[in-house]
Amino acid sequence: MLIKFAKTTLAIGALTLSAACGAFQPPEMTINADQQFYQVKQFAEAVDVPWGMAQLPSGEILVTDRKGELRVIRNGKMLGDKVGGLPEIVAQGQGGLLDIALHPKYQRNGWIYITLSSPQGEGEGSNTALMRAKYDPKTITLTHQKILYKGSDNTTKRHHFGSRIAFDNDGYVYFSIGDRGERDRKPQDLSLDGGKVYRLHDDGRIPKDNPFVTQSNAKKATFSYGHRNPQGMAKHPITGDIWLHEHGPKGGDEINLVAAGKNYGWPVISYGVNYSGTKFTEITEKAGMEQPLLYWTPSIAPSGMVFITSDKYPHWQGKMLVGSLKFHHLVLVDVTETGIKAQAKLFEGIGRVRSLMQGSDGYLYVGTDGDGIKRIEPKA
Image: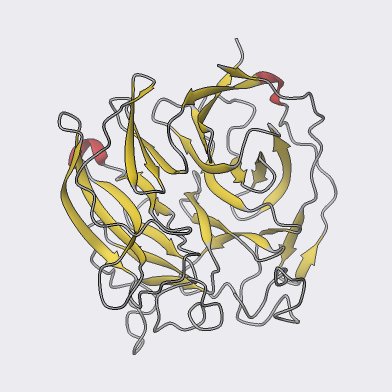
């Protein structure tokens, strides 16, 4: 089904970039984001909150539904059977079955990585966990399941699970855990899980060169800290660096380039305020804390991130795509190897964008809350 959009002029939206000396407004730049070359078609339905997607070499697509279901799209149809073999999941609030990613050498080893809100461990409630497993398409079941890392200090708070997964060129796996609603306790404390990006070997071992392995009481898997709730993460196709975006409170959503041992400032510095409009900090920068490459005020509520490398989208190659939960559009971001030049809105009204994927077939897939999965296709 073709989805029609009102004809719009794709002007550069309100964009704020930052430099080492602080934030500044760049001149407006033309970016070839014209959607006349592409169209959006409904691809699949029957999924409520499609948090993550991964396409197998066979063409099948695995989709996580936050309510705790792993679904399969085969030959363009959502199977009625749900994937079996999932561990116990606490599907409450923003928690549930979250992101999914294939190992870079999936065709050789068959490993799939999944994040979820797990009750494993001590205390009531849950926290984010990273697991790996293998998928048997004949029985539609996960096998060889193993939890590789589980955030400790379970909590009954129902938000800020983070959860995004990415692999770098060396095969390390990165994933995020949000501050779990404990803004003033977890993000700046290296002895606590939450408000962090983690880096592991693909089998769950902690790399010896992780930045805090020799620091007493620190969580050794931590790669960076001072994050609020990262829900987009992807590898830069040229540099191999890991980029992420994260939700601010009211204003102050950010895109960051993740670097070992760096402190991204939450909640000490922020370009946002409390949802009530009151301030929780008076400063936007501080020595020893990283400035974002880009921040959005007002917030767009970003979710999902992908760098476009497919030759199906020649006008967009090398650019980044980000989804907006709040404004129901996509954002095309013109990037360099270490920064951002411009942005433009695409397909306004596409839906509440939760996840993005460039599939093994080269197509861009868009998961939307309550409206299934859409595919962006070149016009004939």
